[in-house]
Length: 154
Image 1 (cartoon, rainbow, N blue to C red):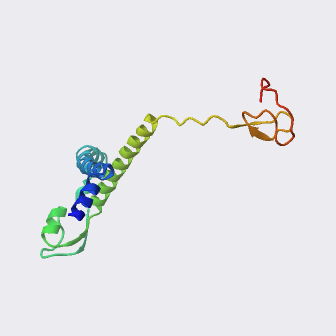
Image 2: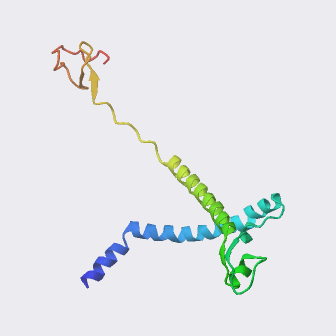
Image 3: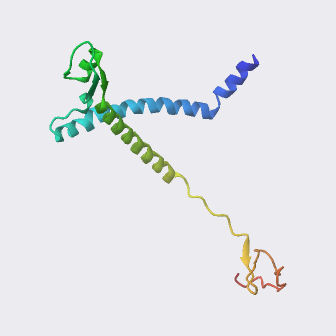
């Protein structure tokens, strides 16, 4: 039972729960980004490039049961051909760049929401006679032994 108690203590710690939520949100976010790339970004790029469909761009490295040419990547894979699907790689890189940009924007936004750190009040001042640093409440400089006027600016 001790092992179960230790596991329960580990599992309900804030960091583990936060990480689990982050992974779940990340998975959902990945699905949304894939849809953005496949449905919103790549069609205009395809239109600009004269109908180029990156999803079906591939190079046949070894033919399968059926001889090339293949019209689509799915057809080549169904025939058992070994293919280098660089179009899928391009789609994946575009998706990665969108995720990276979105995460950058979120982190940047969160950093702006944080309160700026205030600096601690100074604990030393310069002696008006010898210019050595002394404690801010000192009445006499330990270096030059000059008496410091309490009303004089530091």
